[in-house]
Length: 113
Length: 114
Picture 1 (tube, rainbow over the protein chains, first blue to last red):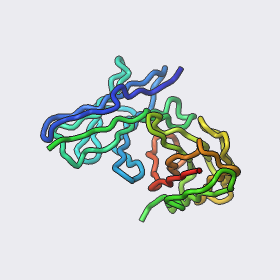
Picture 2: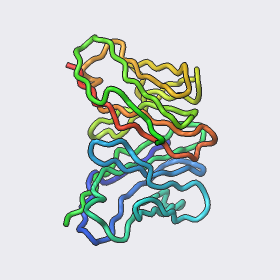
Picture 3: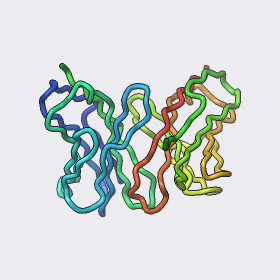
Picture 4: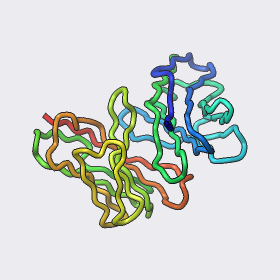
C-alpha cells in the first residue's frame, strides 16, 4: 500500500547545530514530495517541493531536502538550526498526480538555545 | 493579500446541533480540500473538490458534508455533530493545473463538541 512515514515524533537539536527531519515513502513510480511547517496556532505553510530534476531542493527559511529514490526518502535538513525553527513539520506525498496529497503524522522539532 | 479564510476560528457546540464551517479563498484556485488534525494522527483528508460542483470523499468523510457552488467557497457541514468530531479543522486550496502546486492553508478552526 502507498504510504508516507515520519519515523520520529520529536526531534531535539541545539541552536546552531545541523538538523534533519526524516521522511520515507512507499510507492511505485515517481512521486511528488512536499514539506510543510506548522507554527503554534497557525495553518500549515509550504516549505519546499520535489517534482523532478536535481535531487537537492532548496526552500524557504534556509531549509533544504534531498530526494533519494533508492532509499525512498525525502529528509528535510538545515545546516544551522534556529530557536525560531521550533515547529511541527509535515512531509506530504502525491503518489500519482491523480490522487490527493497524503500527509505524514508530523515531527515536532524543538531547537534549544 | 492571497489567503484562505476560515470561520469560525473557535467553536464550542453540543451534540446534534448542526453547524457549518465556512472557507473562502481569493486566489481563483480550482482545488479545495478539508482536513482534520488530531494528536498522533497528523492530517487526514475529509473531502476535496477539484472544481465547482465536483466533490469527492477523502479518508474520513463520515459525518461531514460539503458543497462547491462557487469557486471561492467550500463550506464544511456537520449535520449532527458528535464528540468524536472534536478536532482542529483546516481548509486548503491550490491551483488545479497539474499536481505540482503547493497547498495554501487557512488558519484553522478548533471545534469542540460536548
